[in-house]
Length: 102
Image 1: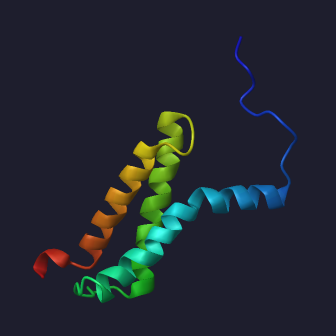
Image 2 (image 1 turned 120 degrees about the vertical axis):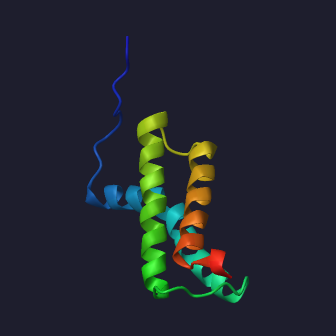
């Protein structure tokens, strides 16, 4: 017999907010680090977008991959999801900075 998916006491709004922040934290860290690292460490071109626009785009890609990983794999925290997130966020940074022209 299948166990219920949700077990334990119900979560209040603070618990939900903390869970969502912790869920999206890996995507947020990469979204902050990639554009700054590309500009200052790798000396890649800045591209046509401001740094906050690049961070926003990269964050959206990362969170979308994490949500897709939960849907497809059935749980959070799989290394394959994190690997795909890093790959797609780095590709997004490469595209947004137009690094192929460098």
